[in-house]
Length: 380
Image 1 (cartoon, helix red, strand yellow):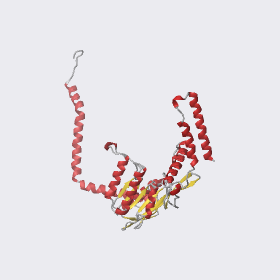
Image 2: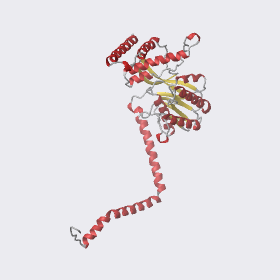
Image 3: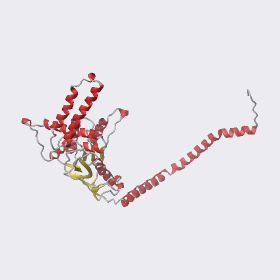
Image 4: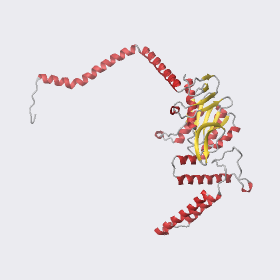
């Protein structure tokens, strides 16, 4: 070499070759052994497949038996008609914490479409999932988490639950929702079980209401399958008097002085309020935001009542049990709007470009004083 001399012997040359080629020779031996094992397994594939099938069957049935014994599941009665009668239904996963509230699920020949209303976080989506999971467990040969169950065979379970988009295909959340609803309307049969959660929420209020209304009528009248539809469109509850087989159910809550407690129980009849503002407060929204939302809700309700006013400008009163767009049973006080207008009028008189820093500070104190008077009046 340029700066050195290298001395080798035939024996060192042999060991060098062995070390440098060891990895490739090991891979060749491994592949040869793999091919040999593959050929041996290929000759008894049908036997191994049968063993795997039997072992997996034993594994599944053992798991069913373990859960049924540990959690006091009951044996369902499978019937040939299209009923679905479950007493004390529980979610097979959520019941593990021991605090799950069981509910009843009932479908029959005259009760095919259940319209579920109630507040957010009340348990509507869990109720839908519970019904589907119990039906699937029963038809797979398992006991079910309920006190009593009579399950009519279901050919398919269709769900439109949750919200997601498809950015890769350029599809928005609402578009994905409509694609899934279209699939349900094309494929569902009278023996299917359909679960719908908040259809039409991804677009404007009236567009969403119109779509939900139309889908409800189409499923109830044309398909006639067992359907659970959870919605905040309380205008749909009136369809119970027009669409055969449609019944209203709701999630119960306890309302004490504006403080709500979720009972997570299902009862017959409609619910005329989603309690969205109260739930927003429970979620931790700042108090001024929640109070402002409550005031705006009162104002919007007054506007809705004004739009329904009869001759002479007197708002039409709702009949007992009739739901409104915003669910408030009393007319909002007009003084709230008047006080808000005073602040707006004062701001409209101000030219920000002409204010000195001192004048701007005085204006802020003035507006704060006006708002404070308004809140003191509301507390009275």
